[in-house]
Image (cartoon, rainbow, N blue to C red):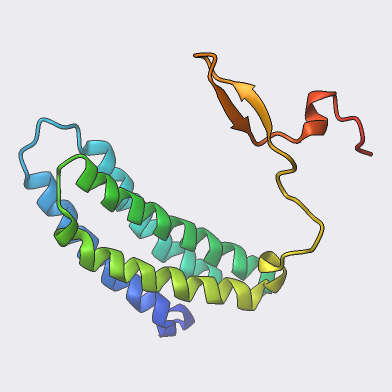
Length: 163
């Protein structure tokens, strides 16, 4: 048995992959005027990639490398959840049908978050006085309506104030 097979999160991801496969077969067989090919492909790829990233991450020796793969798998679990939400929004499924899959994904995300924190605690450390986004500045969209930008104020004046 490989080490990744001993991980509870890996076993849970296998369970989700099996659930997702059944769900994808149902989606493919459901007649609909809506284009569902991209959604099916995306959920299929993301569910498999999450599993593979977990396995590969567990095979890495350095903690930060392991954390990166676990964090990627975590992001893919969120992507799977968004695909399930999209299936409901496109009226290809309903909330009751996707509930079991979303519950599995919630558990997977929690487990992967703990693994990321374990192998790279600095990734989750918040430092006082640091702002990752800086101050948001008002800009106008194509309709002339104000919206907020994630650019730093310094970016507007060519980076003044930065070294």
